[in-house]
Length: 97
Image 1 (tube, one colour):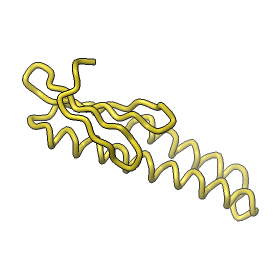
Image 2: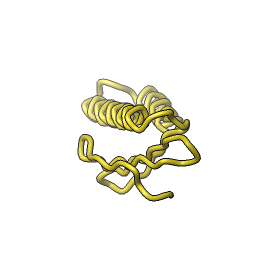
Image 3: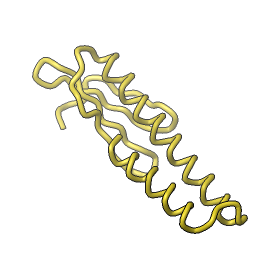
């Protein structure tokens, strides 16, 4: 990636915003070393930073829901098929973020 133009932390994640060909793009690094980038270029560094924060929020919410589903399955509040279906749906959504 190009040299970082703006670097910040958000909810324990590192966000790097780079200036690329007249636009701004951001890359998010999780505490577990997962990497997510914003799919679109943005007109400003602040817009790229906010988009990165939104990706982090969506990932964190999905991860929390997956954890809740597991807990519900373990205490027999969800059957296996429902648990698997819901988890797969959330995992698929997280890959599109």
